[in-house]
Image 1 (cartoon, rainbow, N blue to C red):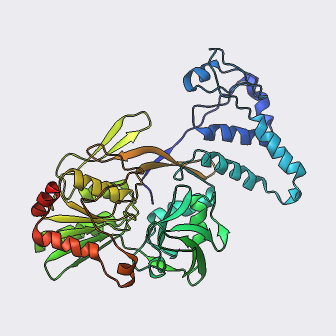
Image 2 (image 1 turned 90 degrees about the horizontal axis):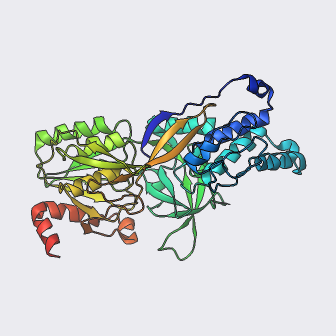
Image 3 (image 1 turned 180 degrees about the vertical axis):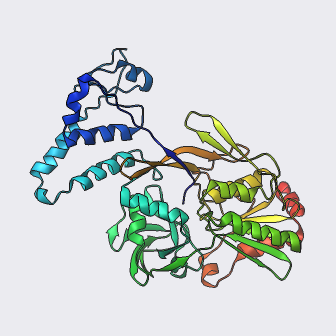
Length: 443
């Protein structure tokens, strides 16, 4: 799951005597207008057959006459030769020549072209969603239960990849692990699959099966893993106290209930004054930025939690909220390759402010920000608008957060339900975080 800011784009068109004929324009050209607006890169449609010279000067791209006859701009700049007549040539060729042309649905063809345009960006987190997909996605942001296998997925190096199986879900019980590469879903190749399309294929009714063809470094051959979908109820925060007086907070993800549940945990910690805290964010795929800032602010009293690097190069600061009720309690943060996005923000902030020891494996490296743009027909565009940096300016995207202490979890550990990372975290707290830091500095 990603970090989102909601925003709405506005579209306006001028009306004049010269444009009266536009009211009678065909549905096809209306579609063309929609596509031009969707590019969102400063393009817009001019009056009939009018050349827009200053557009080339501003955006280094030139939209010429409506007829598609494109030329050098009035400013003499070199411009991209984009002829939108080609779109309609392909559209009409499909409509007139495809063998099963009567089965072609205009809306599906149109939405498919928009999906292809967005996919051409090459960013797996920038996605066009038709109205139904948009509705399902918005619902998933607020729901704490769903039917499926209980795993977060992403596209990594052009391959569908498991970020994290959620605890006690069908995905975890079936043996899926962070970093597993999903090469097929029910025998259908995932090559070039869109992220949201993959989600829809994997989700399904409780009690039904889905088969994932998995590639894993420890596998000699591809393996088909059959998973029976279940009804997944996810509370984002779990807590327990170990016999040695160490308080464990497990944050599953950062959703609507995270801040409230985490606040309850903090109140209990303050009342019981434990020997130390283990903040377990392994297999936490992320979520809302605000939740990450709230959580980190219980250790960080002032200063930045995260920096947001915008498209124009400017950096927006997200400051700590100033509570810091846990700042004096020794803390170890557990992370692994399934820790992504908001969980990386928290881990990076506590590391840069020296508020904890980071232990485990290097995190996933999902450090980009998506804005959800609502479009005219209730479809939407999820578009990457910024990237996250840690308080010291370290890039999270593709780099991840390196742990201070690296501890592996082997296949044998998983099979025997052993947790050497948790064991090491307990030993660090019993020895003392300051002592652990001294040993790290001497290495």
